Image 1 (spheres, rainbow, N blue to C red):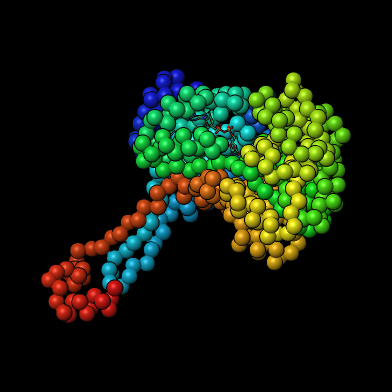
Image 2 (cartoon, rainbow, N blue to C red):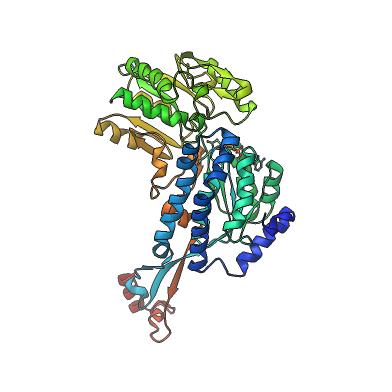
Length: 461
Ligand code: NAD
């Protein structure tokens, strides 16, 4: 545990701020060392993190590696490779009337960042934003989720061993600790979690006028028009069942046209069984629901339709079988809230227009997926649907592309990160304008405004 964190929350934040204020985080060399430390940490301590993820979420080590550690490492390596270019000032052209002069934007760190994470990808969703914060030269306070206690403890133990312990502090705890942190002044807050807490964060940030990035969730729809249905079904089920459905960009529900529905439903039922075997409870690859409250909520949601596949569950194990529901009424509870579990409702629509109207009548989702081989349909979907991101013929995997910004729109969040966008999220692109005093051309714009000046200025500007 870093020295800062043994004290209380205000003292911990003050210690991190003192480290930021001493200027150590600004040189690119410090930033590089932190990013290298991050890469070493997720590489050398893969087993520690995977053991924690297994304990919290029953995550298979390969899934832990792919969806938490390797994504973090790729982000950090990408930042290391591009840091010099990202941090370089950029020249901006100066209009003739203001010349001679030079103008540039120069990325500045924002200062001390607060990063609050959720429980579903408890390691990645703390460390990937941290890559951006460190690359941009910030100090950071990290608040992992108390609902993934083993992962939170692993971060608290390992981060100070690999990163500058004065400038990066891990503060463990639940809502009380989070509220105490939010009372402190930060220079930016990066929050990943649900809409309810998102509002609390935004209100707290208003007190200090702190800029906020909100990475929230929502019901990400998948529309199926046509395609190779066995592949479509596997891609949908893979996205749905990753981390036992507890993924912010999981396809929440499917809208399928009447034509495509019979074959898709048949293939979904098949894919539900093929990924984890006839009895998913015995598969070492299949995760568990985070706690009993979520388990009970999900079992309740399963009553919203006819079970086409799956449906079995075991509370003692927090196990829910991969489940496909058909005949779901849009007013059923399963269609009112983010499912966040391995339950996939399938609803039928007449055509793409009806699907887009259905999506646009609801809060803006984090991602929207279209399965179709028609370029025209894809273009219409891109133009007609509101969503944080769009992905065609694939679900969830787009967030592993480092240079694709990742974030929501409307109810699913504000701001984005990954790749260069992370660097910019944690930077102020400060404009700098420079003239000399040798040639005082600006005098032409000063009063008194003669007729000649007026004519000249109107021509120039
Ligand atoms: P949550 O909002 O309940 O909790 C997130 C964090 O907020 C935790 O660290 C928690 O300790 C803290 N918190 C809880 N109550 C608080 C309070 N009253 N005041 C201040 N802080 C408080 O979210 P969760 O249940 O951990 O995660 C699930 C949600 O996160 C889902 O909606 C999911 O879609 C979303 N999510 C979004 C992304 C994304 O990248 N957009 C990624 C993963 C999860």
